[in-house]
Image (cartoon, rainbow, N blue to C red; front, side, top):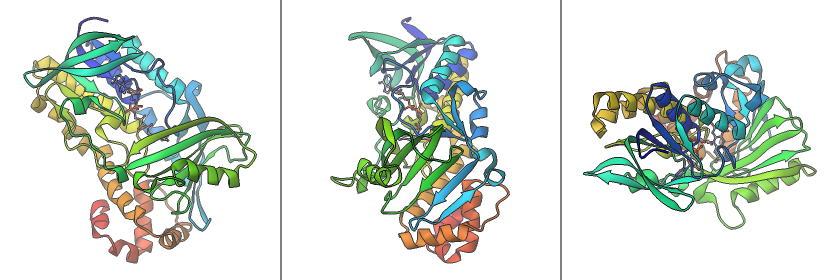
Length: 398
Ligand SMILES: Cc1cc2nc3c(=O)[nH]c(=O)nc-3n(C[C@H](O)[C@H](O)[C@H](O)COP(=O)(O)OP(=O)(O)OC[C@H]3O[C@@H](n4cnc5c(N)ncnc54)[C@H](O)[C@@H]3O)c2cc1C
C-alpha cells in the first residue's frame, strides 16, 4: 500500500470492484479497501441478475453461476400464479449467481488490471482539506494509516457511512428499508429453472417473498418486508419461518442471512468535492425489485470513467464530477429507478383483493418483450380503474 493514489475505492462489492477495474484499466493508480476479511462473504443477496445486464460488465462463467433460469412465476395472495415461460421472459430472466465466487472474480479482475487491494481494511474517516475529500484514514489490523487520493469513490454499500462523514445526507426513511431474511435451503422440492415470487400482505407486507434456485434441490428462500411493518412477532424472519414450515417442512437450512435493502429514491446528489458515491451507498437499488447488483456495477463503472477524465483535466471538484450524477440519472438505469419507484409506491398500497385482480388479469397476457415495464403497461390496459387511482403512475410510465 502506497501513501498516495489517483483513486481510493471504499468497498469490495460489485460497485467498488468494477470502479477499481475500470480505473486501473485506464492506467490509474488505484487502491480498493474492504473492511471484511474476505471479499464476497458473507453473502447478503438473493443473487439474481438478468443475463443481458450481467454481460455488459463480465463474461458469464460457470464457476460463479449457480443456476440458469427458464421461467419466472408470480403468485398472488390467493395462491393463483402467473407463469412466464422462457420465450416470454427471454434474456430478462437470467441467472442466480454464486456471489462468494462472483464478487471475488470482479476484485481479481481489478487486481489483474493493476489495482492494489486490501482486505480487513476499514476506511474510518475521510481526509478533508478546504472542504475537498482527499482520501481516508484506514484502519489496518488496528493500525491507522492515512491514504491520500485525488478522488475517493464511496462504494461502501447499504450501510454506507463514508458519505455521511463527508456531510452528505444519506438518510433512508424506515418505511423504505426492506428488512430481509433469507435461508439457503437444501433438500427441498423446487423447479430448478424457475424463480418464484409471492405477493400479499399476509406473506410479505409491502414486499415479497422469493424462491431463487441455486441448483439441485437447493434455493435461496427469502423475504423482504417494509421496515415500518417489522416488529416483535412479525419480523422478516417470522414471515419466512411461517412460509418455510408450510412449504418446505423437511428442508434443511444451511445458511441464514439478514440484511436491509433501500427502496427509496437515490441520493439527491451523488458527488461532492473529491468524492463520488456509487452502488447501494448512492441508494440506486431498483425500488420495485430490490435488485442492485447491476446498478452497482453500472454506477461503479461510470464513477471510474468520470473520475479518470476529471483527474486528466486536473479538476476534481463537485462540478467536474457532475457528469457522473447526470450520467446515471439520464441512463436507462436511472430512468428505470424513477419509474419503478412510482410503481412500487402504487403497489405497496394495494389491498390483497386488488393484487389478486391484477394477477388474475395478468395470467392471460401475451407479451412478446417481457420486462417490468411491458408487464405494467399491459396490466394498466386491462385495469383502467386501478390506473385512475394514481395519476402519477400513468405519467411516469407513459
Ligand atoms: C437479502 C438481500 C437480497 C438481495 N437480492 C438481490 C438480488 O437477487 N439481485 C440483485 O441484483 N440485488 C440483490 N440485493 C441487493 C444487492 O446485494 C446489492 O444491491 C449489491 O450488493 C450492491 O453492491 P455494492 O457494491 O453497492 O455494495 P455491497 O455489495 O454491499 O458492497 C459494499 C462493501 O463495502 C464494504 N464496506 C462497508 N464499509 C466499509 C468501510 N468503511 N471500509 C471498507 N469497506 C467497507 C462492505 O463490507 C461491503 O463488502 C439483495 C440484497 C439483500 C440484502
